Picture 1 (cartoon, rainbow, N blue to C red):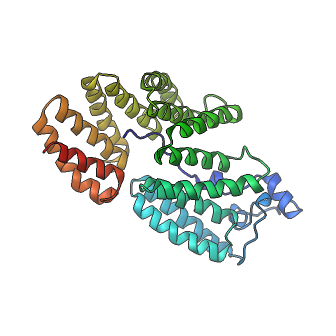
Picture 2: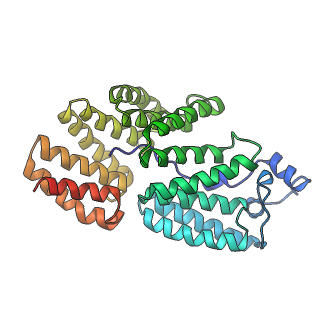
Picture 3: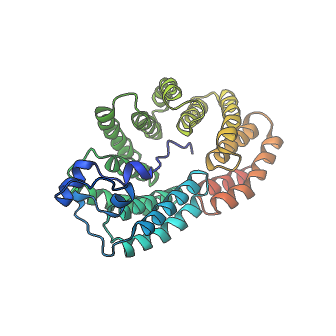
Length: 326
């Protein structure tokens, strides 16, 4: 139950087509003075979509603001609230812009992403596959960042539905393509490296994954910085695989140090911080002080239930850990 890197959907880099694509779609160059709001209301040329209802600039700005607000809420740890807000936004985008308008597709991607983060990986996998098929069918540029984000998500939900071999294969291919497009030191390439290592470990090759992540950590700290969630996630997996390789006390030390840094960077109730705290409590119970570990885990249960929900896989795992200790 070690998390890997969670891809976010940046509103500005995904929902605006390139200038050459926009010219191809309209048959004319964009007029001087047009803002990004205008092009957010327009469609991506090669997707061939047409809004059914034209939204004014004010309406489009409101839709974008709702998307940004929901994504921010999710990024701070409240995935359920983000999904609820984005589901409502998707319905409004379909009505105002059309089912296949570019911005509607961006919101559909966000809905699929937060559906998976909320623990419904099979549904997220289906939603993401449908979007990816649509993009590949209609988009001229298969190296487009929106396609890479969808490929990343599809690989993730594939793994979380149990097909770890296919997830590792998908991430290996994504890593190769991302490095070709962006170079070996881009943040996206590092993301794909980490996710490849994660699903390599999920197939049993933990020593190899541990070595890969230790090599990756220096690059993450240099490119993203020591407090970036991706850097913290690499450290999390190093700690987890250190335990799996037979060093639980060293793993506890790594998780304890990481918990301090994660709390400072993300807050006490961010899902990644909570998962980190779970591992500290679990390792404390089994390898240092059983009563203290039990107390830590019991104190986490109401927070897990409130923040993640009672049916979330991490909450269920915490329940099992508490029951096993009784």
